Image 1 (tube, rainbow, N blue to C red):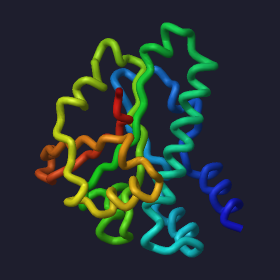
Image 2: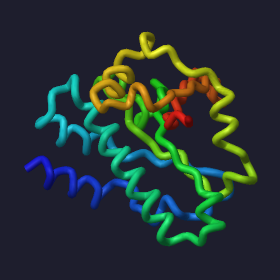
Image 3: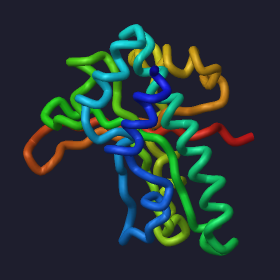
Image 4: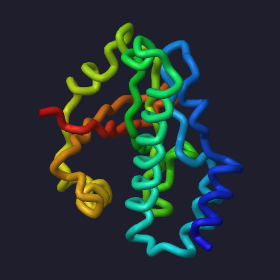
Length: 177
């Protein structure tokens, strides 16, 4: 039953692999699922405390599949210039990103570009502060539940948007040896 709900959500309202390979002007940050009403259908089958972990795990599986798809579809030069990572954006004034306070989860998004060499996005992310997971219990629980806490860093970008809202964006990157 849950598998059918997930498949329908991805068919109806989620991003597809091809969309993540478009050559955007700079970058894009599409959400895993673009409607919270779609998540409510899944939430009936999952404990609220586990919903964030479930969605992050879905996003991570999707991200890994996209990387394999990109490796197959792009030339070696294009693939070397391809960058993708997971993000959470916390903005109480945006319907797509307001799930933390209302529903208890973040909506994973994909930060993606085919211009990594031009914009040096990965290195810019790594210059941001790594979060103290004790201050973000939902993120800590998710990384712990998925055994990612030792192999993934979470970087925080805080800014004020054009409407005066305080925005927090979390970038999830695998640690490098």
